[in-house]
Image (cartoon, rainbow, N blue to C red; front, side, top):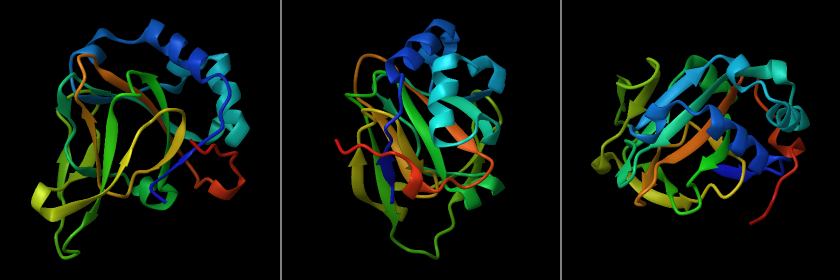
Length: 185
């Protein structure tokens, strides 16, 4: 499974509250930046997370920004914990309806992705692929909250005039996706 829409309460309220606190650099750069959990400790988000797992199960929370008319590199998220937990919870914050993520299949399993550290935000690591390493398998539109498989090569694409901003939450233990309320869109 590459993604699964999740039935979470208060998505609009979460987005509204995060936009009020949004550091300005997220509107201008492609970046992944983690913040202390306390930065996001707001009732609507806490209630939403507690519907699928414990707030204490959060490993990290970050904002992912894709500036207008740009895209992020094809990559898988890299972190030892992610190899076991696999899924992150992504929540649309701003301009996600008209943007998308492309999922890819690696053409040659002998290809090793380049291990990189991003230039903006935190020193977060990822493994990058080139266009010739992969083939497109699916487009995904983040219309509401979704569990997102961080271990399938993917890239965010923003062909709009506004930045795309997503809240991504990674967990300490693997979520049982079969027990999480889902939505079909």
